[in-house]
Amino acid sequence: MAKLERTLPDRLQRRVRAIHANTDVGPANTIFDNSPPDGSLGVLLGFVAGSSYRRWAGLPADQRRAQALASFASFVGDQANAPQEYLERNWVKEQWSRGCPVSHLPVGVLTKHGPWLRRPAGRVHFAGSETSDYWIGYMDGAVRAGQRAAREVLAADKR
Figure 1 (cartoon, rainbow, N blue to C red):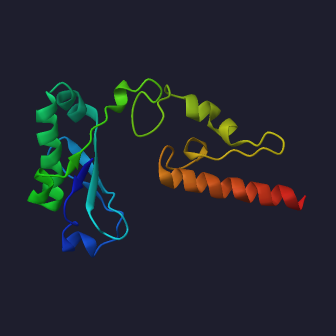
Figure 2 (figure 1 turned 90 degrees about the vertical axis):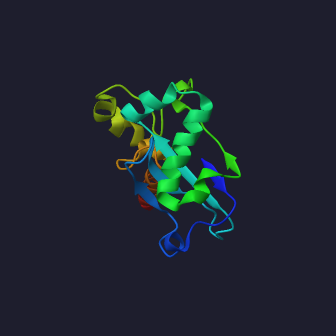
């Protein structure tokens, strides 16, 4: 993630704030605009995945940073090459998540057991991104799961 001194370029500010770009420049090929709503500064988040990650992860920290910033610069311009702050997290090395951006389960687990994650247990209803049937592991999935659980509670209350 890179925090920029200035807001993002006007060409981006005219668009919806939740910008998602796929680029073929550099390792961070999925980039999100995570800037605050007031636009007081620019915050970019990028994911490095697949074969790009395998090549990138073994590089020294300064080279990883330079390559990630080059990805951001291809999206917003040269200001991304000199951020106020740069943060990097290797989710693959995290003990509990073992990857990013969603939970890591073996093939077939969600197909076989996914519906059980959503089933109420008596009066207890479950919500969370991993209980969603769409966009699992993302904020969109969490919101959908919350809406589903709320509908379930309201329907159960009417009985």
